Length: 197
Image 1: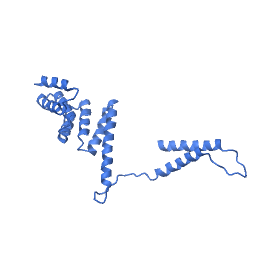
Image 2: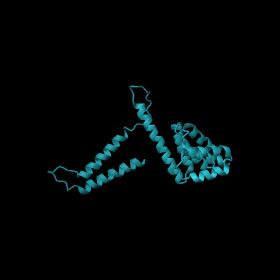
Image 3: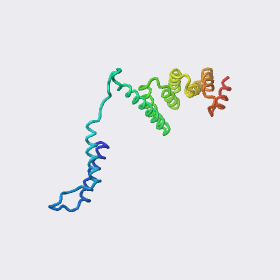
Image 4: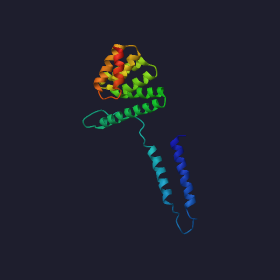
């Protein structure tokens, strides 16, 4: 079945085992009492089983209105989902699964098409996968959404540089230097910019 079902079954077995091991021999005149740990485990099992029947299965389609604050809460939850997708994509990319990272980031930009950071992350993954032109498109979207995003300008410059478009790359290297004057890689970027002239 499912992992949850298996876990609940194991808990029930432990509860039964604890009951048979911890209960004194039954006497005709004394009622049977369960030890406190057994009661707690049994309560958790029953509560968990009951909670499973009340899990919502679909998205809420509440309409925005001044009287209905639910869409605002859904928007916050939506943002958290995009941030989680981006974080999971970063983790999977670090472990070498760029294909999975790309899928996660495509979900993120589908959920939040105006999230410049998600487009920047997608561009990085695409360029690393050898899809430089698609990466350039993602970086250009990011810059269009947030022209002050220094990372997007730098990544776009590097991608354009790889795509043998030095004039366009130089413009974005300059934008990066203007937006991030204290960046630790400033000297390397200035050196690369000098070679493009």
